[in-house]
Length: 154
Image (cartoon, rainbow, N blue to C red; front, side, top):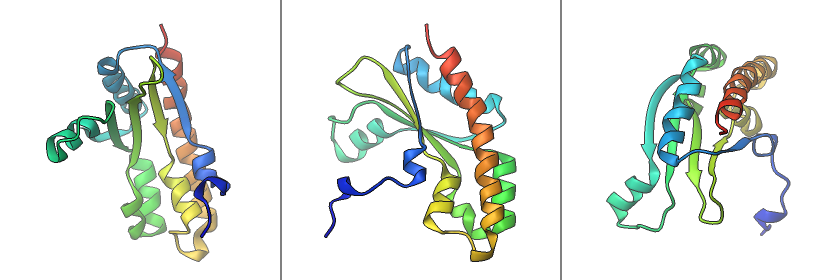
């Protein structure tokens, strides 16, 4: 049995986007959501994980954590063109959370399309199309991330 901490991260995990914001959590969640929407991502759902866990399990030990679930029509279209089953790997999710160890609000995004690539979810003959999808997603998310980092500081 191998130790998970000794494994090298996949490109999906290694290339995840992370930043911190200098604003209250209550302001950060809608701010990050709007930055996605300004780049033509549609908000599918915003969910407060901490509240869901507290409400359903009674645990009040989870730090404030929100999931911002979004989908970009071009990414969705291209994924469906590769294989309709890839829709199960969509949409994209960005997490906004706090840590007791610091006074910052963290924003983290793991690429769904890189996960599609790294997990081998697409048909074997679609490597080029998947790489194109990863590239397009990266370009679109780079705009979102640049704006979050530029406008998320005091």
